[in-house]
Length: 81
Image 1 (cartoon, rainbow, N blue to C red):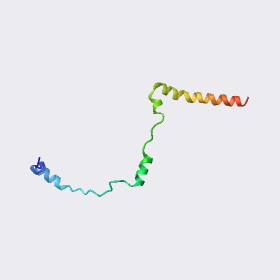
Image 2: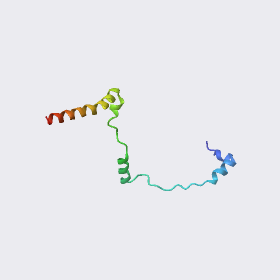
Image 3: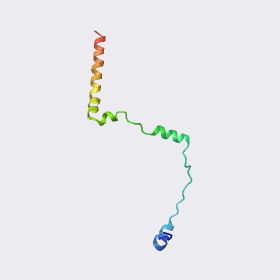
Image 4: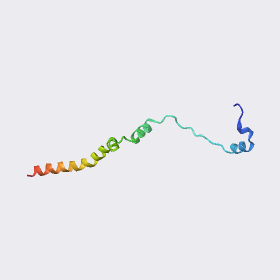
């Protein structure tokens, strides 16, 4: 494949020669500050994901606040009797 396919088509070659792109120099390795910011901005793992993925976990997630409220209510009732 030593032949250049663009040399055969004169129209395509003239169109490609019209455009000149200047590629700016940029550092390949980011600085420590940029790496630290990227670490802080990375997404965190969802701690409730294992609970939401199963039907029993989803039911537990819905019932847990109700049970917690009932327990706190019972504790307050027993303290003020």
